[in-house]
Length: 292
Image (cartoon, rainbow, N blue to C red):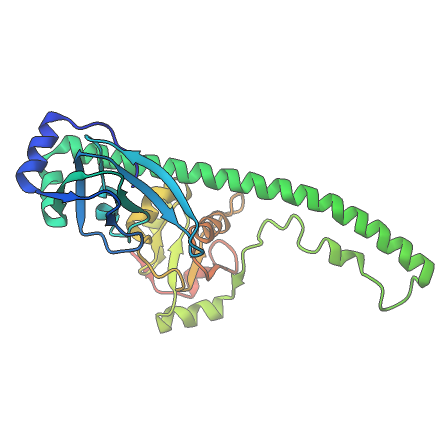
């Protein structure tokens, strides 16, 4: 529920025509985090606080909305549960608009619809920046860990030399760096297992190649999430899928492993069971029904 620009006269009049004026006393909870979105709200008077609460009950205040601001539009557009709670800081009057009326407002108000799209785009950009920051942080941690690995490796060599270099209970040096630098660290699934999952309808298939290759020929019913358009297409295609449902990603060429990169992005989005189809760039064509 982000803070949005101030009200415009055209928008206020239109919202007032379709909405209902509701009043909340200071301290009243207007929106509860995690609930199904039902209404869009416009702050007519008073002030409200937007905040999140963790499972441990830790509260994080996000922003304060004054008259002329509104909230709840993103949840109505995406259909996702409320990501934050809102409560009145003082006696507050809001214009409450139902989802059906809100959809009608968007249909008849291109300016508001354009702003909602811009807000979603800003969320995507902010999400990518947070993801990039987290990846940089993890890389730095790995660099620090590598220094620790070197120290441990040297220590293990010294201890092994002092005790018995051939001692089978010694620490193998390759265990210290197992998997380091592996570009294809995403789990793989064999063609045989993938075909079984496809026939049993137990997994979702994602084609990670550019759209031009996807249109030529792809696994039937597979969704296309090309890497450059991933964030935009993910909202349309997979944002409401069960995060526990197995996802099998395919699509690579000699120079670029699109499948691995898209699989990682899906993992960052919270999908718990993402695997890459094993084999070469063309192996899937002889194993699955294809279209067009």
